[in-house]
Length: 225
Image (cartoon, rainbow, N blue to C red; front, side, top):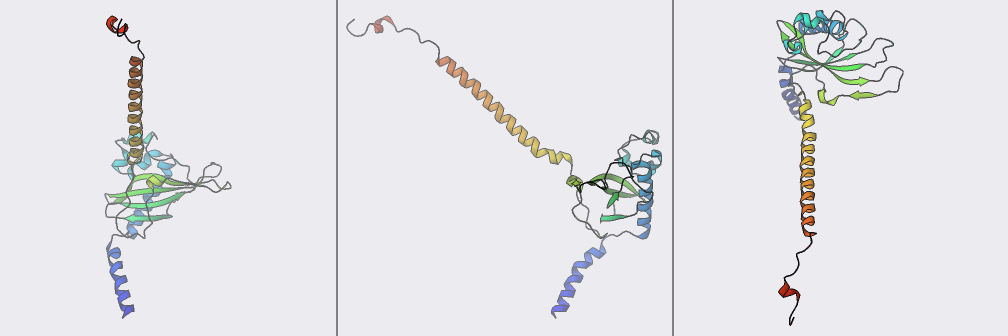
């Protein structure tokens, strides 16, 4: 009975995950094709105009095709090695977005290390297009002392198997800076209050240091004068 109960419980927990959205073979093929164009042209900055059609209007940020082709685009540049970029892992899948991790290795003698990127893609017109591309962790160059610099502001919290459950939140720099701004404001107020108090204290001490007026004549002589 205990075995049957455990099996039933496992099935109960597995059912919601199984019901979540997953990537089909067609979806994976579309993502692979998009990444190949995106990295080879947008990230490498080679024939940049070709990457215009594999990004969302949100990432284009109002760029015209002509302006985009000039190369000054909002995509992290990197001299990636290779031509195919299909070795990515899934962070999460929803109906409206896919989050993946993609590690790019630099070309030889570039002096750079591999970088793990977070890539967010949205479905549009039957294809998956890149909506956001950001570095998550930078590894040391080959042959140097091992070191990893991670950008925790952009890293999804857990890797998934493609099942749903919603993606991680993208943390804005505004939220990260808010506590420091608040602390700075408090310190500024306290400093201003201290300076004002010091000025008032100095004025008060100055007034007390003034020479006292002379005593009236009928008092200065004392009794019996």
